Image (cartoon, rainbow, N blue to C red; front, side):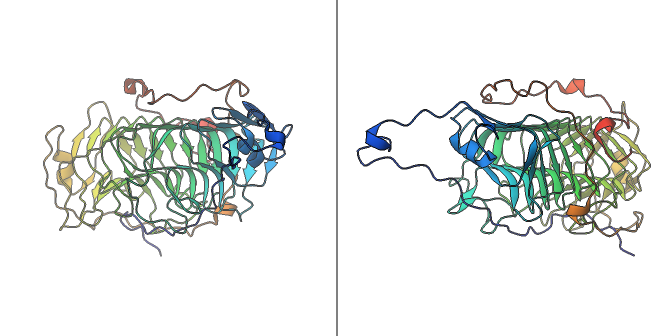
Length: 453
């Protein structure tokens, strides 16, 4: 019988990404190359696939800065790299415009330019990730966790990608990550769906002053629904459904990425329930039955989330090597039917501290290990707390499923008016009023989910 283990950040397998698109060369006198020295025609503002370009790759090579690539229904067996600023890649039908990795291609879409948008399409069956937004690159192209040649970020060498949006994207059956923002700021992941990922369905990592909004998404049948590693200072995770995974969501500090520790996320109005999926890839460390894992995460506030039906723990706290879980606040959350509502697994050499609980307006937590967690009333806290490593329920962990065999997602709603010309993304994200995210019911976004709450 396999037993669930305390959640810590696992080692990442490096993966190589293919090379970036090279810019065209000019003539020796500085004039654009072309017959008789004539100037090339200006790049089009809109390129339609397949009417005006047979492939998405050709369309993104041709489109003007700030332009729109509009992709009709069909299955496109290619890897797409966007290296022109402010380009929008958009499908005409979210469910029928499909970029298919065939289980052999490394990725679906890489956005490697400021202002990139990916909207209203499906990306499936890539070996490593469906959609990646990143500024990190090597001589042969963009890099992130999951690509050969990746090493820890040098912030001076790789300034973050600025401004991005991923909206109405279905990312299914991708080997490691579904939707992945890495070293990118001032962006949003909204109204999207992710399933079948052996790492995480949605991932935000490695940024400071991130200004990132994650809202209206469904992540299910993943090893982890949503993951944050070292993304801090203005990350808002609100109104999502992270249910039916092996672990609902994680907030992690990791020395494998820059900007430790992870800190200061706002997690509000999410449903994190029934993370017991057997129809999902296995978690690298055997994690299972956990709602929220906070491993070395600090100064995060979790408010008005429904965290229920997780048979190991609703929330599991722990250390990441010598980085303690500190000053995390739990305000007006609803707990129920968890193995333990709040469980501290920190090593005694790195105890958690400053954890505080305010049940006002919520439903619990009712159980905790150690029990002193229930006495840590906000805002003052009671740390340091001595961690315990036993006493939580032991559960049988089902074997993992190949990412290619995870059930296909249900049809998802397309965005309205897909042919409408996009405006340039603003310099900062317009964050919603967090008071508008009440404690959700168990049916939050259930019409988009393939697993029952």
